[in-house]
Length: 259
Image (tube, rainbow, N blue to C red):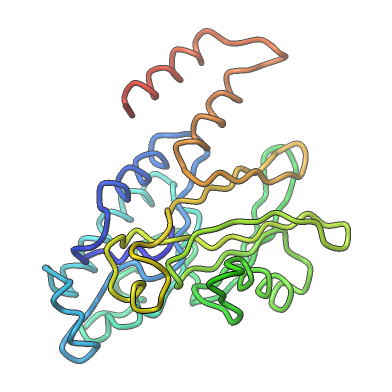
């Protein structure tokens, strides 16, 4: 999840909450955020943007952290990263250290490496940044590719950026290594900034989801969490080539509830 912009009237809260609920209720699913958690316009920070915010910055921070705390209490957050809008909470009398003090998941300050071990023995390393040089409207995954190349030094399996409110992913082979580059989209669908930058009337879909193989090192990417959820649950139903009736019932129950 990137560029949630909680507190903006242009944010799709239904979609954001649906994606959080998928992570909260599906085994081995985790939310990973990549900055701009809140919108945070204030009189001292881009006051023209305040018309997009029906609630104050301090209320935005409290409401967002409350949602994240629920996920964190269930162990459903992989990591959280800080973005430029999050930096503005100082104007509301908050800091990252205080607002996220009770979150147990790793907190990244704009750019950092992620290490993911699996029960099956496969290990993954990624590099994430809210924004990175090389952002392109045409070659959308250029920035995470440069992030992989320069900050990951060729020793990572995936790179993720946000900030541009675009959404795309690409998997490619370089030097015999399979790499995944992701630009994570935005939940702020009605966005004057995106239109002003020529990105489009509304940003691309958020919620790009990676599924990590456990016995064999392989990353599969799904543009929507719902698709990844169905894939993982269907995979869990199969054991030694046969369907397990109890798991099938659980799977069908999840699908019905979601519909």
